[in-house]
Length: 109
Length: 114
Image 1: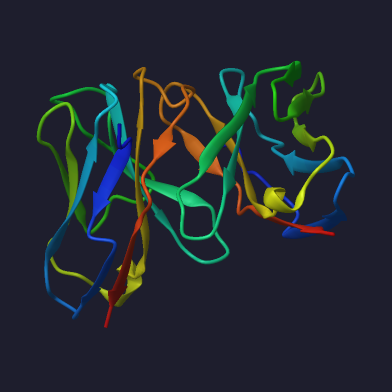
Image 2: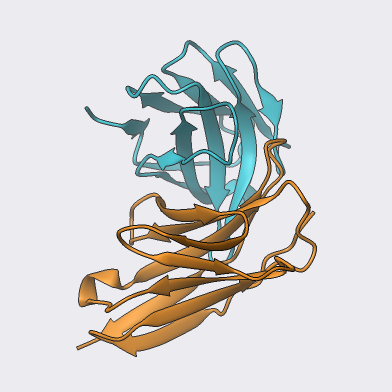
Protein backbone atom coordinates (compact mmCIF):
# COMPACT_ATOMS: atom_id res chain seq x y z
CA UNK A 1 0.00 0.00 0.00
CA UNK A 2 1.16 3.51 -0.72
CA UNK A 3 2.09 5.54 2.34
CA UNK A 4 1.47 9.26 2.11
CA UNK A 5 3.57 11.95 3.78
CA UNK A 6 2.63 15.61 4.05
CA UNK A 7 4.07 18.56 5.97
CA UNK A 8 2.37 18.94 9.35
CA UNK A 9 1.76 22.65 8.95
CA UNK A 10 2.33 25.64 6.70
CA UNK A 11 1.52 29.29 6.84
CA UNK A 12 1.17 31.98 4.24
CA UNK A 13 -0.40 35.38 3.62
CA UNK A 14 -3.53 36.50 1.89
CA UNK A 15 -3.12 36.86 -1.85
CA UNK A 16 -0.18 34.46 -2.08
CA UNK A 17 -0.06 31.18 -3.97
CA UNK A 18 0.29 28.16 -1.68
CA UNK A 19 1.74 24.82 -2.71
CA UNK A 20 1.31 21.73 -0.53
CA UNK A 21 3.22 18.61 -1.51
CA UNK A 22 2.33 15.03 -0.69
CA UNK A 23 4.82 12.21 -1.03
CA UNK A 24 3.53 8.76 -2.02
CA UNK A 25 6.55 6.68 -2.97
CA UNK A 26 4.78 3.34 -3.30
CA UNK A 27 1.87 4.51 -5.40
CA UNK A 28 0.40 1.75 -7.54
CA UNK A 29 -0.51 1.91 -11.20
CA UNK A 30 -4.25 2.03 -10.50
CA UNK A 31 -4.08 4.61 -7.72
CA UNK A 32 -5.61 8.05 -8.04
CA UNK A 33 -4.61 11.09 -5.98
CA UNK A 34 -7.32 13.16 -4.34
CA UNK A 35 -7.14 16.21 -2.11
CA UNK A 36 -9.69 17.17 0.51
CA UNK A 37 -10.14 20.24 2.70
CA UNK A 38 -11.40 20.08 6.27
CA UNK A 39 -12.58 22.87 8.54
CA UNK A 40 -12.87 22.39 12.32
CA UNK A 41 -15.87 20.31 13.38
CA UNK A 42 -16.74 19.45 9.79
CA UNK A 43 -16.19 16.50 7.51
CA UNK A 44 -13.64 16.70 4.69
CA UNK A 45 -14.69 18.29 1.42
CA UNK A 46 -13.41 17.32 -2.04
CA UNK A 47 -11.05 19.76 -3.75
CA UNK A 48 -9.47 18.04 -6.72
CA UNK A 49 -8.44 14.65 -8.12
CA UNK A 50 -5.89 13.53 -10.67
CA UNK A 51 -3.97 10.58 -12.07
CA UNK A 52 -1.04 12.19 -13.88
CA UNK A 53 0.24 15.54 -15.23
CA UNK A 54 -1.85 18.55 -14.34
CA UNK A 55 -5.48 19.03 -13.39
CA UNK A 56 -7.12 22.39 -12.78
CA UNK A 57 -10.55 23.36 -11.53
CA UNK A 58 -12.11 26.57 -10.28
CA UNK A 59 -10.43 26.42 -6.86
CA UNK A 60 -7.09 24.61 -7.26
CA UNK A 61 -4.53 22.91 -9.46
CA UNK A 62 -2.94 19.53 -8.95
CA UNK A 63 0.50 18.77 -10.35
CA UNK A 64 1.65 15.16 -10.64
CA UNK A 65 5.12 14.39 -12.06
CA UNK A 66 5.71 11.53 -14.46
CA UNK A 67 6.91 9.12 -11.76
CA UNK A 68 3.78 9.91 -9.67
CA UNK A 69 5.75 9.56 -6.42
CA UNK A 70 4.50 12.94 -5.25
CA UNK A 71 1.79 15.45 -5.97
CA UNK A 72 1.41 19.16 -5.31
CA UNK A 73 -1.81 20.95 -4.52
CA UNK A 74 -1.66 24.58 -5.61
CA UNK A 75 -4.06 27.16 -4.18
CA UNK A 76 -3.91 30.48 -6.08
CA UNK A 77 -4.33 33.77 -4.23
CA UNK A 78 -5.38 32.37 -0.87
CA UNK A 79 -7.68 34.18 1.54
CA UNK A 80 -8.29 33.86 5.27
CA UNK A 81 -11.11 31.43 4.54
CA UNK A 82 -8.61 28.95 3.11
CA UNK A 83 -7.28 28.31 6.61
CA UNK A 84 -8.00 24.60 7.06
CA UNK A 85 -6.43 21.15 7.11
CA UNK A 86 -5.65 19.67 3.69
CA UNK A 87 -5.50 15.92 3.17
CA UNK A 88 -3.90 13.92 0.41
CA UNK A 89 -5.64 10.63 -0.38
CA UNK A 90 -4.22 7.84 -2.50
CA UNK A 91 -6.70 5.18 -3.46
CA UNK A 92 -7.83 2.76 -6.09
CA UNK A 93 -11.08 1.12 -7.07
CA UNK A 94 -10.33 -1.82 -4.77
CA UNK A 95 -10.94 0.41 -1.74
CA UNK A 96 -7.29 0.61 -0.75
CA UNK A 97 -7.55 4.12 0.66
CA UNK A 98 -4.56 5.76 2.30
CA UNK A 99 -5.07 9.20 3.78
CA UNK A 100 -2.20 11.47 4.71
CA UNK A 101 -2.05 12.88 8.23
CA UNK A 102 -3.03 16.29 6.89
CA UNK A 103 -1.38 19.68 6.50
CA UNK A 104 -2.67 22.49 8.69
CA UNK A 105 -2.60 25.63 6.55
CA UNK A 106 -2.82 28.97 8.31
CA UNK A 107 -3.39 32.09 6.23
CA UNK A 108 -2.42 35.39 7.81
CA UNK A 109 -3.73 38.85 6.89
CA UNK B 1 -31.28 18.42 0.44
CA UNK B 2 -29.44 17.62 3.67
CA UNK B 3 -26.59 15.59 2.12
CA UNK B 4 -25.08 13.18 4.67
CA UNK B 5 -26.45 13.31 8.20
CA UNK B 6 -25.10 11.58 11.29
CA UNK B 7 -26.53 11.01 14.74
CA UNK B 8 -25.63 11.58 17.47
CA UNK B 9 -23.16 14.48 17.27
CA UNK B 10 -21.59 13.65 20.62
CA UNK B 11 -21.60 10.54 22.79
CA UNK B 12 -19.89 9.46 25.99
CA UNK B 13 -19.79 5.75 26.80
CA UNK B 14 -18.36 3.65 29.55
CA UNK B 15 -16.07 0.75 28.71
CA UNK B 16 -18.13 -2.26 27.69
CA UNK B 17 -21.24 -0.36 26.68
CA UNK B 18 -22.64 -0.70 23.19
CA UNK B 19 -24.06 1.84 20.81
CA UNK B 20 -24.99 2.40 17.18
CA UNK B 21 -23.98 5.39 15.10
CA UNK B 22 -26.51 6.28 12.45
CA UNK B 23 -25.81 7.68 9.00
CA UNK B 24 -28.19 8.63 6.20
CA UNK B 25 -27.75 10.25 2.80
CA UNK B 26 -30.39 11.74 0.53
CA UNK B 27 -28.29 11.99 -2.65
CA UNK B 28 -29.19 8.55 -4.03
CA UNK B 29 -25.56 7.46 -3.74
CA UNK B 30 -24.59 3.83 -4.17
CA UNK B 31 -21.54 3.64 -1.91
CA UNK B 32 -21.21 4.49 1.75
CA UNK B 33 -18.27 4.50 4.15
CA UNK B 34 -17.39 4.72 7.82
CA UNK B 35 -14.11 6.34 8.90
CA UNK B 36 -12.49 7.19 12.18
CA UNK B 37 -10.24 10.20 12.66
CA UNK B 38 -7.75 10.38 15.51
CA UNK B 39 -5.65 13.44 16.42
CA UNK B 40 -2.58 13.82 14.21
CA UNK B 41 -3.68 11.05 11.88
CA UNK B 42 -5.55 10.89 8.65
CA UNK B 43 -8.86 9.18 8.25
CA UNK B 44 -8.88 5.40 8.47
CA UNK B 45 -11.53 3.35 6.74
CA UNK B 46 -13.46 1.06 9.08
CA UNK B 47 -16.07 -0.48 6.78
CA UNK B 48 -17.60 0.35 3.47
CA UNK B 49 -20.64 -0.64 1.44
CA UNK B 50 -20.11 -0.56 -2.30
CA UNK B 51 -23.82 -0.95 -2.96
CA UNK B 52 -27.03 -1.74 -1.15
CA UNK B 53 -26.84 -5.23 0.31
CA UNK B 54 -23.04 -5.45 0.48
CA UNK B 55 -20.53 -4.55 3.18
CA UNK B 56 -16.78 -5.06 3.41
CA UNK B 57 -13.99 -4.49 5.89
CA UNK B 58 -11.65 -1.58 5.56
CA UNK B 59 -8.33 -0.91 7.23
CA UNK B 60 -9.47 -1.01 10.90
CA UNK B 61 -12.65 -3.13 11.26
CA UNK B 62 -11.93 -4.84 14.60
CA UNK B 63 -14.46 -3.98 17.29
CA UNK B 64 -17.07 -2.71 14.84
CA UNK B 65 -19.99 -4.02 12.85
CA UNK B 66 -22.05 -2.36 10.16
CA UNK B 67 -25.45 -2.66 8.55
CA UNK B 68 -26.52 -1.26 5.21
CA UNK B 69 -30.18 -0.97 6.11
CA UNK B 70 -31.23 0.32 2.69
CA UNK B 71 -29.75 2.54 0.01
CA UNK B 72 -29.98 5.61 2.23
CA UNK B 73 -28.81 4.31 5.60
CA UNK B 74 -25.55 2.79 6.85
CA UNK B 75 -25.07 2.22 10.58
CA UNK B 76 -21.95 1.48 12.62
CA UNK B 77 -22.20 -0.55 15.83
CA UNK B 78 -19.77 -0.81 18.70
CA UNK B 79 -20.69 -3.98 20.60
CA UNK B 80 -18.39 -3.46 23.58
CA UNK B 81 -16.78 -0.04 23.57
CA UNK B 82 -13.12 0.36 24.56
CA UNK B 83 -11.12 3.53 25.33
CA UNK B 84 -9.12 2.93 22.13
CA UNK B 85 -12.32 3.61 20.20
CA UNK B 86 -12.41 7.20 21.41
CA UNK B 87 -12.36 9.11 18.15
CA UNK B 88 -14.34 11.21 15.71
CA UNK B 89 -16.37 9.05 13.34
CA UNK B 90 -17.28 10.20 9.87
CA UNK B 91 -19.74 8.70 7.45
CA UNK B 92 -19.37 9.40 3.73
CA UNK B 93 -21.09 8.49 0.49
CA UNK B 94 -20.28 8.55 -3.21
CA UNK B 95 -22.22 8.14 -6.42
CA UNK B 96 -20.25 5.37 -8.00
CA UNK B 97 -19.09 2.12 -6.50
CA UNK B 98 -15.50 3.22 -6.15
CA UNK B 99 -13.47 5.46 -3.88
CA UNK B 100 -12.02 7.35 -6.85
CA UNK B 101 -15.39 9.05 -7.02
CA UNK B 102 -15.94 12.16 -4.89
CA UNK B 103 -16.88 11.32 -1.33
CA UNK B 104 -19.35 13.49 0.53
CA UNK B 105 -18.91 13.53 4.29
CA UNK B 106 -21.24 14.01 7.20
CA UNK B 107 -20.45 16.34 10.11
CA UNK B 108 -19.06 13.56 12.31
CA UNK B 109 -19.80 11.98 15.68
CA UNK B 110 -17.41 12.69 18.51
CA UNK B 111 -17.23 9.59 20.71
CA UNK B 112 -15.52 9.36 24.07
CA UNK B 113 -15.13 6.01 25.83
CA UNK B 114 -14.24 6.22 29.51
